[in-house]
Image 1 (tube, one colour):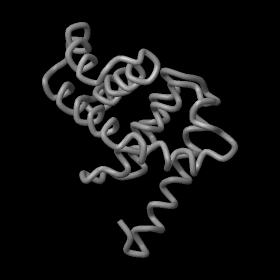
Image 2 (cartoon, helix red, strand yellow):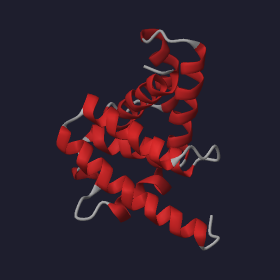
Image 3 (cartoon, rainbow, N blue to C red):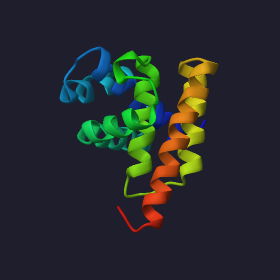
Image 4 (tube, rainbow, N blue to C red):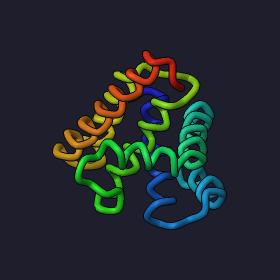
Length: 142
C-alpha cells in the first residue's frame, strides 16, 4: 500500500475521532501519532488532509448535503460521512489531484472501513460532486 493511501486512512481515522469522539483537533494531532507509527511522509500528508478538511468543514458539509439526495449528514454512517469529507477536501484542494484518483481512493477506503453498499453510496455522491465541479470549472467559476 502506498504512502498516500496510508495517509488518507490515517486522516480518515482522525476525522472520525473529531466527529464521533468529539475530541479537539489539537488533541487529536497530539495523540494520534503516539499510537500510530508511520514514516514522516505519511504523517505530513495525513496532517495536511485532516487540518485542511477541518478548516473547510462547513463548506465541505454543504457540498455533500447538496449532492447526497435524501440523506442528511447526521443520518449517514460516520465512516461514510468522513470518507466523503476527506474526498471532497481533496477535490477542492489546490494540489488538484485527478478526480478519478480521489474517487477511486475513497471507494477503496470505503470497502476497507465500511461496506460494499457504502462504496456505492460514496461513489454516487462523489460522482455527482465531480460533475458539478467540472461544470463550474468549464464556466470559469472557482
